[in-house]
Image (cartoon, rainbow, N blue to C red; front, side):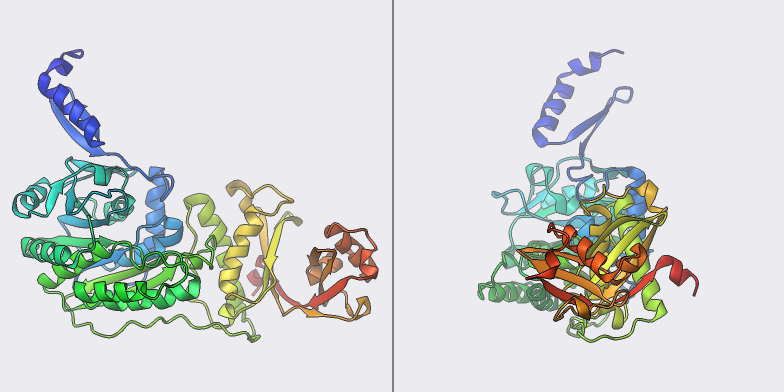
Length: 518
């Protein structure tokens, strides 16, 4: 047959349009058919780019997800950041509809890329691609929307680089492999537009086996504690099912000029459409399934975060206000049980394992009060008994379990004395955790008890620390330990003798081999 088919004017027009539309055209020369597929734009960045890894990643997240508290879901709100930050909250949202049977999933995407889009952008193609394959578009529903809603336009440019729809697809492909999709980018958060289109969409979907997914993150870039307060207000506005209430809440929050806060919900428009559509379909309430922000990730920063919420709209009566159930961690010294120690060690290993294999980390939740009190901590990796990495945080300024996850990542990958730990050698390592008491100044070296005290020294802008077990493991006397500590700080061996600040602390030390014996 050769390339004679390409000489057809129709095929040449299709090729040119495909290039202009930002899609990939797949042509079957024997059947003389063509498909325009939107290629994945953020695979390998927002989620794993390998098919097997991606499928396993989604399965792990769903296995750890919050079980459904509702029986009759209509729509969900799910975040769309990288899976390492928001994947578990997204899985919590999709868990609410797992096991259901849907012919089509409507994905309401946030408009991050098209400044000129005012209405609702449909994709003028046949499917969306991810490493798991192609998700086909429900063409009949798309054409019905285009013909009957003046708000809808065909606009591939709004979809070409938009991640808010794409990151939802792997969950849909794993849970509903036979479902088609209708990807819609909502142009602007207008209450009038979103209410009108959402109501129209709801009427159109009556009697159909369809799920609605609104893709949105919450607050952008305030501090950790501020985000939790702001996001709580927004989540309570979302579950009212009233776009006007959500819009009013967002405007009121933005009027406060909160430091660092750039937006309260980047996907306010998709959420408002989902509210109106769900209410038209008989929703009587909304339920906040879970919440976290990027500061809850062991790779996140707590001074600048993005919030994520999983919400389900249901036909059941759900009117209770959502309350942030996160306990304020205590500064006390609650005793750690053996179960606490096992859970913290498991968290440390799972954090590094999941990051190496799936580019995600476990969301720290479900730990005891003792494991969530504010404590400093060091995490140590040893390989065949030799040090392989050790980093800690001495200030008791964050929950212990979160500190363990964060320090596990630091010790495994950022200890400057060692190369990053690889997946192949992780199985040969043992993890040890040292939970610290508060650091206290001492009057001099004579106050140090070797084997009981960890020691921190400071002099000339330099500092160094040894955990209590280091001197014992090395067989050092107190003076030898201080000599080595001074050298670790970049000082001369005896610089600790004059003008040096000395602090001590104690530690609860436990390792994987120790807890296996119990």
